[in-house]
Length: 258
Ligand SMILES: [Mg+2]
Image (tube, rainbow, N blue to C red):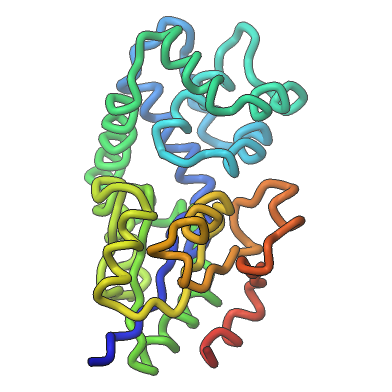
């Protein structure tokens, strides 16, 4: 029996650049649903994505983290700015945890209000919401080329499935499946998929995820590609093990030959 061939993709930073959407949706969540006494949201804040937010984005694993980052950036007292962001990212996970604790928040509630903020924008003005995302057309063409060659495509994202689905539909992409944060960790999903598919590659912009795929005996055979155009930390491109290949946007089509 030969397995159906499939190529796996992360979504944010790989298929689309959603920086404006992350900022907008997290800011709207802060404004409408967070009820924090420490912030008031000036409408001008929606216009520009602050540098500090862009620089911290590569550390983000789950959407809820963006809400607390936005909260820290827009606080009038001791706000998180570009010049002091290094202290924040040097202890990223501890800092996220500390802010959750200080405010009596929990990550599930923050994720819920991020999803609510997205849903609210979709209900009000779907077009404007979709337009906050900039697709990487090279990736979309690559996906179409795979489909032409009867290789399936699958998306594994830490976003809510419904949101990735809506954007992909708009881009005319119909993957075999989309797994969102609701489905568990990427490693677990990849592990299960490798029982039923021959996985030709996994394209991701979070290096740690690829390292974990390679460390897991059930998934270590999956060829891993780090997306050079994604939200990479400065050091990600260096000291890559030869099991993880850095791939540039312009070289994607070379992977069709695999
Ligand atoms: Mg990503």
